[in-house]
Length: 171
Image 1: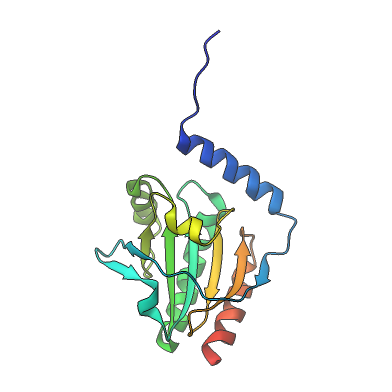
Image 2 (image 1 turned 180 degrees about the horizontal axis):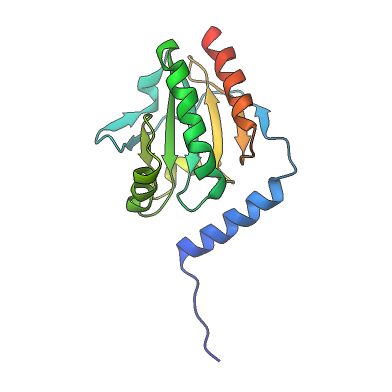
């Protein structure tokens, strides 16, 4: 009998798929409090972006993977929100958790977005934010505090995203 070892990437995909399925029945948004952990990651625009440097802006921090169907579905919808509220001090940081950034880049070639995409190939930033589902979105206020958490994505969640962005840019 031949026994094979599942590689880390495949195991992660299987675990995330199971987690997504198991949280589908949960409420998609929870209120949060406390400071968002600072981090610096390389962006698809070729420069490093540090969360701390975005103080004064509302930040939608979205953790996603190229293999995640709901992530792929929400990306263009997030871009609409970004374009609508960017001039009001709002930005999106889409943190890709693929081990190989070329997987994210291939997806972005077919579904381009105008907001920065960051690469968290070793999932260290994902761990800082206790990401346990794909996608996971954390709304951060102008003072750098976590305010809302969304685990997973279903059609219509973008309506909640926009309501929360409106609330936070008005504060």
